[in-house]
Image (cartoon, rainbow, N blue to C red; front, side, top):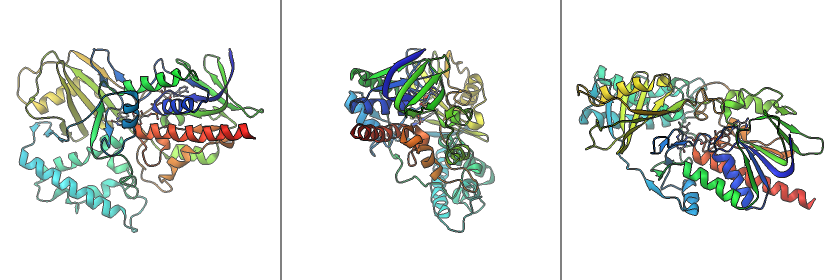
Length: 445
Ligand SMILES: Cc1cc2nc3c(=O)[nH]c(=O)nc-3n(C[C@H](O)[C@H](O)[C@H](O)COP(=O)(O)OP(=O)(O)OC[C@H]3O[C@@H](n4cnc5c(N)ncnc54)[C@H](O)[C@@H]3O)c2cc1C
């Protein structure tokens, strides 16, 4: 079944990178075909509303809310409401209950000093490629432990591991040499959210692209082959036998999925340099849970989040609503295999020890990005320990092939913003600008 319309560009994937490229290219007057394998758009931006209340199963925060995150510009242009999140870092808990205020203050001050210690150490020329963040952060000379007893030191280590939530990999596997490489350029500082969730941005990008009359979307169509044809176009096959053709194409297939593609998925095959960058880079794990209750059981007098420090990882539970009572839980790689009921038990025992009865969740929504074959993980991770691994691998993931006709976008392709919504959006803008210029040059030739 061949779609005979020759488009300026065929975009594989309708996540935020594909949607940002589609929106910007249609605005520039180019014709766009978007092919998405799921039965929904948004990819790892996934706002679940199955219980009548939005819960983000993928991205939630606008990091760098007051520091120039590009999401704000799009939200304003589309009339979407945004709001800053309170700057409170909330309360700390161990599995046995709350950590007292004095110790919490000491632990947080030590963590800040340990961060500076890591930054200083990571810029030393004597540091080998084999050094991990844990080698420095958790070393016996780290300021993480200043003035703490042996049992408090264990809590300090667990607190240090909260950084693994965003990274998706253990401190032991994260390169010390490249840690903090993007700090100062990546969006950080204050946080905010889109009221109603990222789904609103996703829908707006699609609608605005479609309103130009230049964009067409197909869902439930998984691309199975991408071919550079003899007449210098790109032919794209889907697993249900459809064929789409473009002067150019853009792949936004996530890094985790790219790692599993058969070697003949791209014809001719991708260059060895890109294939090594795909295998050297990695994808981290982070899952989300929404736990709904019939009645409130946590103390609402102090603001969240509730940070529950365990030996195997940190659970971050954010009370996102009191009516209905709902906890939004971030589950890191070390705990990603636990059931929602088990996570509820851990949270309730830590946050309200000895309180009877804590109600069981009545509704649960959860992600499973690690097993989702269209993602295979949460996002690209920071550079891992190991010879030859550098952030330049992310730049290589972004390099176009076939004379520039096939481009690559997605969070993993943005050197300074990998692993984030701005990374996805900026990569789509970057490729839209490049492809627009390429198409305009071809017209002039
Ligand atoms: C749990 C979690 C929490 C996060 N929290 C935040 C946060 O708070 N703030 C933040 O800034 N970022 C956050 N992120 C990161 C952010 O969600 C991602 O960086 C961003 O959504 C990625 O967009 P993308 O377009 O690169 O990829 P995707 O959204 O994955 O889009 C790629 C699309 O390609 C499709 N696809 C794959 N293979 C094929 C194929 N063969 N044929 C057709 N289609 C295909 C997929 O179905 C998908 O829709 C989070 C991510 C996760 C998972």
